[in-house]
Image (cartoon, helix red, strand yellow):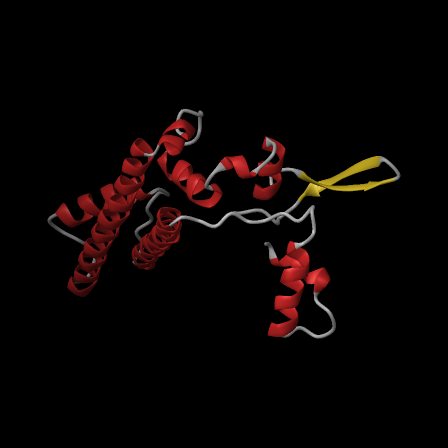
Length: 199
């Protein structure tokens, strides 16, 4: 069960005994919604996505640092990873370079680290692509325009069996894609999109 559904049943101050009692009480309610347990494969894939995101963040930070080093020396590079890569190739291939030997070694070291990060990110992407091709539900999701292997595997890992949701709207609400609803006296009032869903 989601902890927010158990909280109303906790009596007085929170402690382990009262939490266990509240869970038991909440479980007896006929309208209680339960969370489906994730399989080992789902947990594995769900662990890989943040690891890949961390590497992408590290790569972005490294590229920004390289741009800053060049900018401090008066070399302005247009935005984009590919443009920086091309600029560095021409800069390092030139016979006369306006950079000091130590700065050139630093840039070479950073380029090597960048290539290693690209290799590791590509390994994750290939694993996600293989998963999307072999798993039926992920393969079906990739047929939707705009959803590729990365999103498909993330959805399958987070959602699991979609049968746990009665309607598509319930899934959208779980993901945080529908407006918050305030209903009183039979008059529904739709508020803004909530931030409660899964990023």
